[in-house]
Image 1 (cartoon, one colour):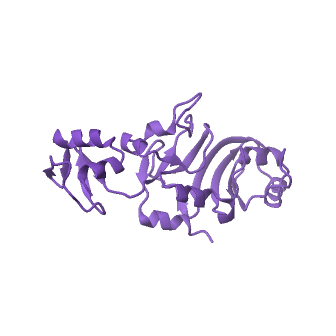
Image 2 (cartoon, rainbow, N blue to C red):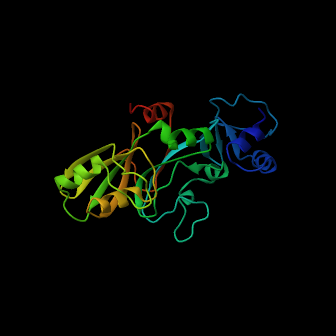
Image 3 (cartoon, one colour):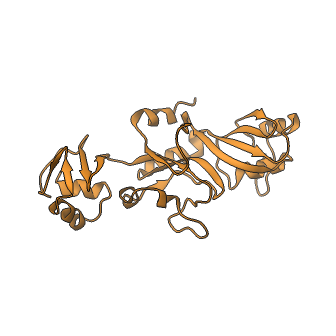
Length: 235
């Protein structure tokens, strides 16, 4: 594949813009500057840098983001900054989308990708991929509330009770709630229906992929093959 097309596929702009980057000496393969936009290269596994920033060719972009509070999962946010403002321009240029959404005041693990089939697979109710949330509650959680969440609570406009796939009490004001559906404001509505209130909400896992303890709010990382495998290790 021509170098200018490789850069274009990785989100560095139009072919014309990528050609200009190369001809201005801003692209290096390994440690050697490459000024030929039409050189043919094998893209798989290609390591390169643009303006000193290292990159690796990836057919699709799969990343995790530790979403901070006060950000919207939208490219056209209405009231708060967009989570896409936390990503480097090439990722935004690849038109990555969030895999599902987290509310503005919800933090934690958010996945983003430019692979539409991946988004569908992870969000389809048929796949039953669990999402685990750390829920801080206003009132102490009692046994009756835990039982109601496991049994199922009736939400407004829902035809049947909605139950958590799992519900674990961590302390008086903290539970880990596992869901396999994605209803609007589901965790908050479920806790309200059980007789409590959500004070803080953080998604800590999707499938078998857990938000790393050393990942700061606002930080993003590439998902490597082992990470992608963990997403499906939940059966």
